[in-house]
Image (tube, rainbow, N blue to C red):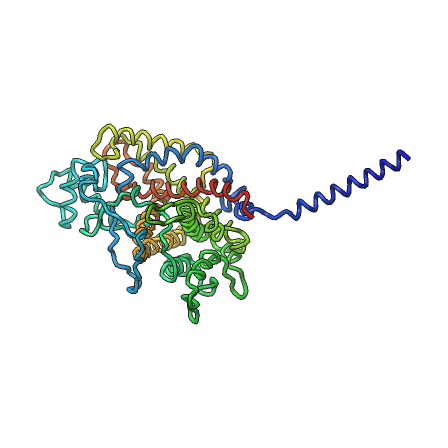
Length: 487
């Protein structure tokens, strides 16, 4: 009897466990799982994992980097938002208030920055003479012999092909200083066919993609158009599905994986930049707009539409992994450029000696922290084949990216244009650094470095662009928490 009773209890227990297991299996996934379950472990083409990046960025780097970017040297960026689009004329300007950019009045920018809108910080005492000589297109014989030599070297440097971006002429009367802290990157409402066209041109014509590989839901393709009254839906679908196109014989990603590492990396950089921008827009979304106040905050629905694995047919997690790839590329560039900033002659010149010294100390602290990161991306695999083929591929890489930087002048929303130009210039500067390793290694310990230089524009864009990516990685942690109980 006791044995039979034990058997019955055992059977009932097993049945209860079986039902419990089935219940757990049927429990619906949370939105956090759908967005992030695949965004973990090691990244493709890298020896680094997502968890290591999260811990390093969110707890070691992010707070100090934000403090640096709030300083005067890094908050003021000079930009020309009036340059015409070089590719098409029918730009529809965004008329929304949130698309506008408020430039600085002359007296709002520190005098040191205005007088130091020059190329090389260690040559502050020569700037006025050198800029005048450059504007005249010749070396003024009244300048000292040393200054003449410097101007000629700088001109030679500027004419070299190390730039990955089409940069603004900051001497143009249309170029204005903008306070980045007063014009933050956030959701502006800029969307629809005009916004779609920007990303379409970038992906379709500048990502080494053959014409036979088509992306779906392309309203700009032949024979397609936005359905009446459905522009917003199509735009959202573009954001969701633009990476998931299929050809008749091959899927988009199987084609992508067959590319060489350099072309595959190029696509992942652009995809990562796009993902980062979408994270910013979701994290600083206009939640309330009344005559009393505007309230900005996290829009989890918007984030899900862009990154949920189910809603995006598996594409959202890929984009987030590309964001981490972009983070590693720019992190590696910052680790490589440390010797440039360590030189005693270099200064973050604003005119305030105390602030300048504190900023440089904080900058070097951040760069040394970056240098200590244990799993840096190894860029030595890039352009490592036949020298002639590698040179041509590198030049193609550069020209494609320069083209993308020019496309930023076609963005109809001025605030989006501002941050698009800054972030592409920042990424272009990071690429310039990665491909200048030997030049950086050969820099003199003191005095001007003629072979490798960074303008103030490049420095400001480099750190602010990385700050945007660092912010995106930090915001992913916030969205993980917010989506834990969303189904």
